[in-house]
Image (cartoon, rainbow, N blue to C red; front, side, top):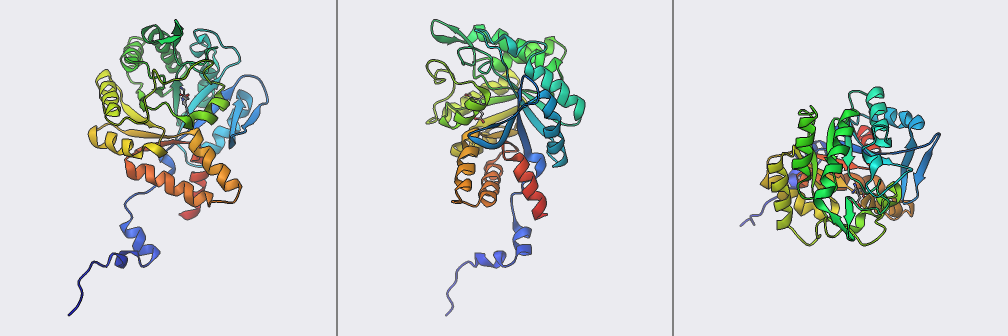
Length: 326
Ligand code: PBG
């Protein structure tokens, strides 16, 4: 009498066999690489908590863009780190603001690169919040007008995608209307629809100098404990005209990526944020983990969870590793 059971190992016998049955693949064109642009000249400043990630002045940025393009990466998102900050974040929408200048340059050097603009105020306000402050609180509706101006100025500078990350209610509706009125009907909005108030943003705030000077972001960013609320956030952004949805952070929110993917039919982006990058880099520097193996496993996990694209500081490393494998 023979014992009956399933032999799952039959499909794992050789690399070729495993390749035949593999369900999820990573490609360089899944990635969106974050770029930090600073004012000044001849600057290439490494961010201490993000080894391998630099802030570039415009005269040094071309080398970075060239590398990105040569690695087969097809998209970047540009963050500006301005010198001058004020209460209403006026550098965010200045025609010659740092993001506007960087965007124009990137599009000049690499017109084919999908160049996204992060539409938020926290890098530009002296209080470090993502909107305007009234009575020690972020004033939702007063912030919308500034965000619309910012988005329109980014589109005017050549941004191919507007990616608003500020978490004000109604920001997608307001920005869609503002873009349409200014003649940018064809510029899509990638909404940071589901953005949690996360500790994983720590290194970004060092890089972008955007730490809130009082309080925190919990009255506008989501509580990490909430799942159903994520679906409400995503649903309203779709109604308001979002073209793509983002879930952020990614690693501790893989269930949310899956849920958003299953619930809606828009493309889903996962933002593998600064703290997730820092953790892996730090452990790898100590020799505690295999950086390449762990990173590719994590990125594959985001795709398996439902992400169509991944914003990641690992984009260049991963694109290099994927070339080695091929
Ligand atoms: C702006 C913004 C943040 C990030 C992207 N856009 C920071 C924040 O909300 O505090 C974080 C990105 C990262 O950690 O890599 N609001």
